[in-house]
Length: 255
Length: 377
Ligand SMILES: Nc1ncnc2c1ncn2[C@@H]1O[C@H](COP(=O)(O)OP(=O)(O)OP(=O)(O)O)[C@@H](O)[C@H]1O
Ligand SMILES: [Mg+2]
Image (cartoon, rainbow over all chains, first blue to last red; front, side):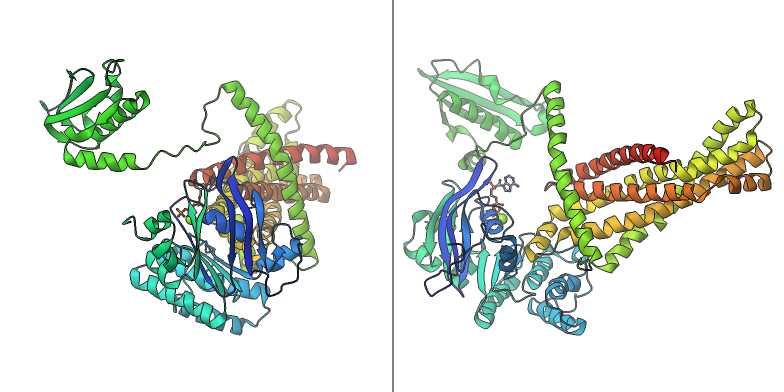
């Protein structure tokens, strides 16, 4: 079943029986969920519950202990290397710490994926780079090195790099941590615009309650104590009638 | 510590099975405070609950909190109830926060202390475990070079130039100093021996051939391993810590092509050139010593060098330099790529890169010397 042809019933992204572990320490187990095309899918959970680890399994950086991730029905972790490479090409990733390449300027960071994979002329690439940087509010910072930016600016530059190739799926680890409230709000708007305008499917790990509730179409809550997911669904519904632990989280412990 | 104000703790039985702990004075961390275990003796079988009294408490900081937390932990282990109401309000609240989240019981893999023998054994096993990784890395680099030859390896030319500049021109001063001193030592050593047979002019042969064939490459190798090999490991290790290597992986860009290849090329180009330079500097030192101390004329020395040096000596030196360069870059990049995810492991990677680099240089030096001897070169 590794290469089932995509049809209407095949989920866009499906996580099946996924368990992730570091050595003997099982971070999360029995994860089963589906991400629909064009959704903004929120991964919630307390610090250290395994959100980043889940992200690493989704994008092919960390082999799951069991289970797998399916993109359009295609088994990512059991695919041949070329197929996996092709699937990876459809993903854009924003790491929690930004992970900008420190020996390159911001512009070079954003340009590298473009020049590696598109064969566009340099002038065209420069144009695209400036546009993407302007989108995240960093116009004019092209020639800066990552070390010369503030933490929040690094985050935004890294988002520009993740969007460089207009990926089908954007995986974002904590976009708004370290951003001021206005910038965080702009970033939320940008995420929604990317989805509406380009049809990008977005998986976003976030703690920001405001963004969870305003942009999330669907969500999953990872519990740090039982080491598994305890809820999926629209965050608004979860807030109204979900599992008490999720409500507790979404109301900052008020219920 | 101000005089007069120190901590006091008294204990008094309260009722049938209770214990009251009376705290007084100044409980600050600079006051040589007791641990919660001072209660061990007082907590006998009969005691089922403790409470606090803090009316005499003058001043406190987290020193008091750690003491009380220690007491709570001790009581918890023995099933003794703790009533914190007698403590100041602030202490109660902070204590409640500190105890709210249960301690994570996650086994950390390497935290246990080990005896010397076990450590040696483990280190030995580890070093053999490292071998397959090393071979795998070697394989990846070989593939990368193949891609380079067919023109399909991607890296930025600017990176190559930067590494070349860092490894080459900037190493000239230190290579000059070391080679000059080594040439000087060689000349003295030779002069002493050769004087006995009245053949002092052969200092020139000794220094020239020695420096060009062997010692130039060896000294350069060791210098570059310390300078550049360690830098490679630290650079790649930091990139590992910052997820930068993962960012390459997710884009499907080979970090071997992009990061390791330019570094390998830079050292394989620069170390032989530095070796050549070291050889000339060594010969210069020999000339200075011969002329000033042992009365051998500069022209005489020069013609003797010309007679002694054959192209094959240069070939041997250059080939060794190239191989050492490859070894240093290999060790540096290997350790950098294997680096863990903390600042401490970056330091270890740099140290390990130098050790591995020098070890590899020594091994290949011996092999090449024997092979060249057998081949009669
Ligand atoms: N390299 C590692 N080795 C061992 N354990 C790890 C490693 N990385 C993370 N962990 C453990 O895995 C668990 C999940 O970590 P993870 O980084 O996925 O958390 P997170 O949900 O992203 O947290 P945060 O919200 O703070 O970013 C943590 O308990 C952590 O201690
Ligand atoms: Mg995280």
